[in-house]
Image 1 (cartoon, helix red, strand yellow):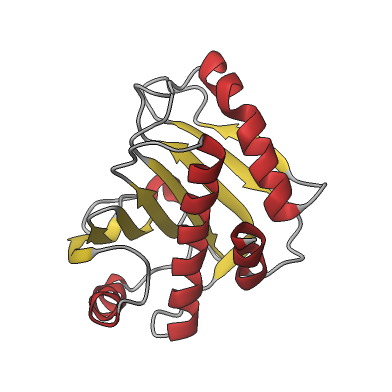
Image 2 (cartoon, helix red, strand yellow; image 1 turned 90 degrees about the vertical axis):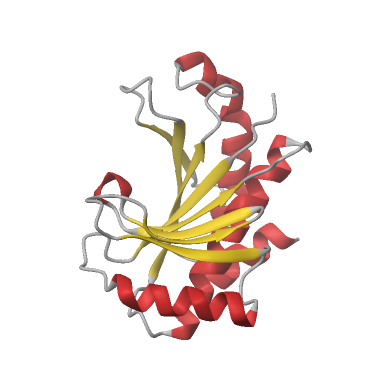
Length: 192
């Protein structure tokens, strides 16, 4: 079953660093004006007051971007939404590519001081009706996740299920590998 929403989170190089959320408000407004990242971008929402929450979100019609601190780990989260079909492997790769490209744009701007680690990406199946957080749900997508991890990180890639103990949370996995590539290199691996 194809989910309606998938997210990918690229972790910050220092996931515990204090983040100046106000810098992201200005940056995300610039992203809207300059069409820096993909998608029909609409607005910026400030959730910085929520502990370990979504932070600042750049809201779009088909994709949202946010500087996210959910789970106590800072990162750039891309949420691909309004998915109407396609192959799961292509949807996963595209969602991860969107997240990596937005992280690269943040680094290139430099105004926030946040950099990203190119050795891990968390993928989450936000649509729990399509993919439940269970052993069977993970088994159903494990082959696609392993193929994506290998495409990103090579033969040493790993896929580890996240939040397995909490059935009410969305199904999630962390794809990781050696840090031999940068964000640009990972994006090019998904673009070919």
